[in-house]
Amino acid sequence: MLFKEINFNYAWGFPQKGLLTGLDFRLKSSYNESINMVKITLKTLKNRVQKEIKKTDNLKELNAIFNKYLGKRGEITQILRSLEKLPKTKRVKVGRKANEIKNFLSIKLDQKAQEIKEKLKKETEEKEWIDITVPGKKPLLGYLHPLTQVRRKIEEIFQAMGFSVVEGPEIETEWYNFDALNIPKDHPARDLWDTFYLKNGLLLRTHTSPVQVRYMEKNNPPLRIIVPGSVFRHEATDPSHEFQLYQVEGLMVDKKVSVANFKAIIEEFFQRFFKKAVKSRLRPDFFPFTEPSFDVGISCLICQGKGCPTCKGTGFLEMAGAGMVHPAVFKNSGLNPKNWQGWAFGFGLERLAMMKYKINDIRLFRSGDLRFLNQF
Ligand code: DAH
Image (cartoon, rainbow, N blue to C red):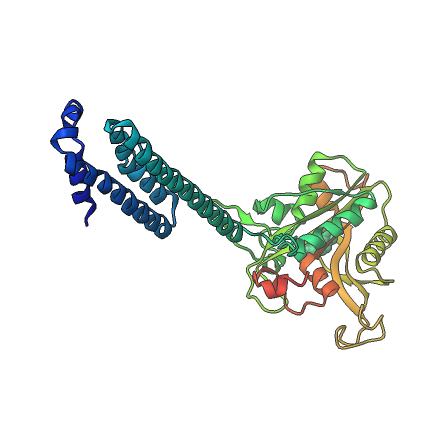
């Protein structure tokens, strides 16, 4: 029998307040029947609720079940309320039964709620489980580019010998890049340092040598500086040529400065840089801004001067251009060449790095290729 019908019967059996007095004699026979109906209804409800409780697996539904049957307007609550209208003896009997069922179902609901909560807890515990014994992931930290590492090493060595690190502009005037260094407009040496000219008449410096003049204009000797920085060349690239590279310029000026001083400093530097015993060799060369000028070689790092393919059998590697500062350069810097002597050098930083790490192509440095970079 459908619950609605049962409900109907029971409503019919227990008329609304005020009609109760007539009930006993008016509906004597159907009265007992109604009591039985209530019992049946309660039993049916009990089974149904139990089934519903069993079927549900979430708290929301469970709450709905509670409200539907045991809540303020719940079906069982309503039955219990309607019992008030029964005579005391019947009321106690049916009431006890009804309360039993109510309590029984309350407990069932509580148990189920507990079960669902446990299950939820277990699920989240499983989902959020962390194995604290698994070793952590190392964050990917960047590191310094090999050229930066080499530059810092060079700076460190020269600073330890009393040199200051100075920088100059990468966009230069023709005056500082050429004229001030004793390379006038028609001088064939300009071809050697061909560069990129900007529309406003400035140019990308081809060497760090202009900083010699810039520094001497503003600082009185004695002075010892190195100038690391980018330089640019109008050049076709190949394994040993790039159109952009780093140079390190060196300059020492004092009352009495000699080639011997230069040799001592440069040998000391190479030994500290390569961490090997190094011999240097000076050969005559030509630069417009030094007189005399020389080419600086060091004993080959591979064969220690015996001769090998790397040094083309000469036992020496060319490392830098150098010389005694030309009087014209002193004059252009505002210093009297009669009062001062100085030596200067310039070398390519990439070349130094290539020798240290045995790199055979200068273009690798700016290739951005991680297979190359990750080795440093
Ligand atoms: N500036 C020269 C170049 O780029 C290198 C050089 C040679 C620098 C001799 C000097 C020097 O200071 O004295 O090729």
